[in-house]
Image (cartoon, rainbow, N blue to C red; front, side, top):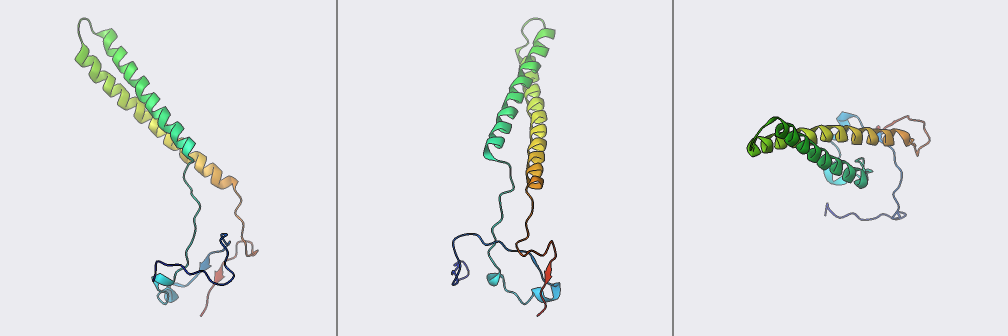
Length: 136
């Protein structure tokens, strides 16, 4: 069955390091989808605490934007202006949360790129970045 993976002799439960093999396009059609190797890719997203901190800062930015919008309209209006104050509070909350959301996404992406660049790439074959070409 294609979904089952049968371990071969000598395989262990540890991940084996491998390198990328370059196969010419003319020879790719010989391989079936069920015979392709299983690969493990490391998680490239930001960590869960970073995501939680970004989410909290977006909520805080929306709350502060809502307070600013409410206060801005409430100070300019005389009498009962609850509708206008509520609408401006909603607009302020959306603008505040949107702005903090953009900044937090940019910060998470920059942290992720910085983390990926600081980890050196190792080539287990010891060929210093040379790629193998398979000729059958």
